[in-house]
Length: 222
Length: 222
DNA sequence: GGAATAGTGTCTATCAGACATTATATG
DNA sequence: CATATAATGTCTGATAGACACTATTCC
Image (cartoon, rainbow over all chains, first blue to last red; front, side, top):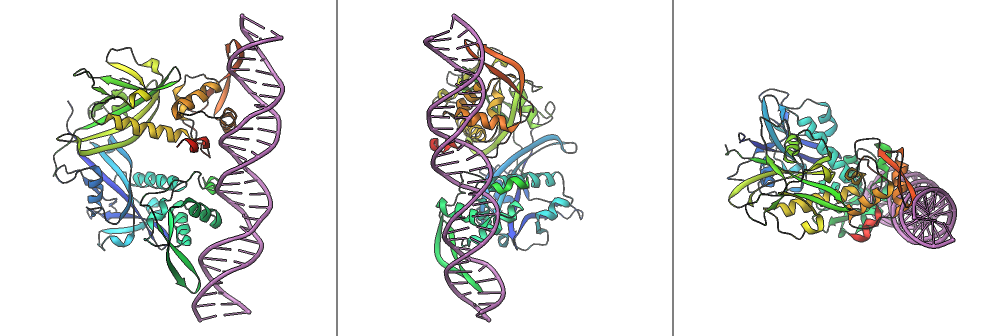
């Protein structure tokens, strides 16, 4: 019989800020470079399930404002953290960056910056692997839309795809995919600016839509 | 601070037996209908990582004869098992059914039979979800080949895809995918029978290959 | 009218499916 | 030669990408 083990749930939270994909980081403050992703130890009194722990780690116990939450993987080994068998269940979340209260120890950092900065433990890897999953899945689903507010234009959807994927996507192809698929509905409202106004849409289902084919422009960028 | 928790690793092992996709089941013998999938509690002395626990659960500590192993998900909640917060990391494995020693408490059961029989705990669900993952991934990867022996014909590959996916795939399309992709090499050997003999192939890489598009015949069967 | 972005029309290339055809072994 | 399976040729349809074009608003 083996000794018991403490289990953490960590969350890589993504949001869009000025058309940039960002990740939520916490500074535990022990020393300067100790940026981490949010996480909590499972509390079997408080948490009913792993998802509850994930939501608690994001300070959103009832999950409001977490528009999408998906488990990525579980890491467990003797040497993930020195001298300690450690286990972490990793999720990623898509949300609006406004919902996190301004706190000095929290920040939304652009992914490119994250990928070159020093992170605590193996959190760099956890972020990379979550990003990889989000990117792959965005090639054949409507996931990037879950980074947007409830009402959005098709151009905003395109910007969201480009922020997630890291390359340009073709306007007409994307619009064809989106409109042919029948998971968007016009709200009837219109976004005005100093040019032709744009139709506003909303999701008619709270779940991501799966397309039959991937965005193939991706192949040249692999 | 929450109480510690015991963590199990469970494995849904698939193999091909007479062109049928089968799942490895264990009967713990306490009562008749207690078929389960193999599993072990993490032993932090013995196991270096989660994968080690998975391999140990399959009675294959060094992983020989497990041709493919992939983590599917981690289930954790208060009510998965009555009156106990329980946590299980689930993997699926692809292997040759010959490698499991004949033991009275082990059996390879065809998936269709599994899906209609009563299983212990939530193991029915774990199998369904693993199968789902295997099927989805088989639409755009070479995974089914990992159910075959080292040398195989293209017709055997087709049968493997059909066993996994549960529907017929078109011969020419599949061969085009396989041969255009450059992850197979002819062994030079030949499989003989009472008809035209077939070229034998082997994998030139031990990793699954990812195709650019899915097997679209799938769409009609969804 | 000019600037700027929204939204469309349409051609091409690629590739999966369908299915007919040819090839090669055994008995 | 009959049978059975291996392997190929080739047409069609669907759809992603490219990109030029039109539409509509503000100033």
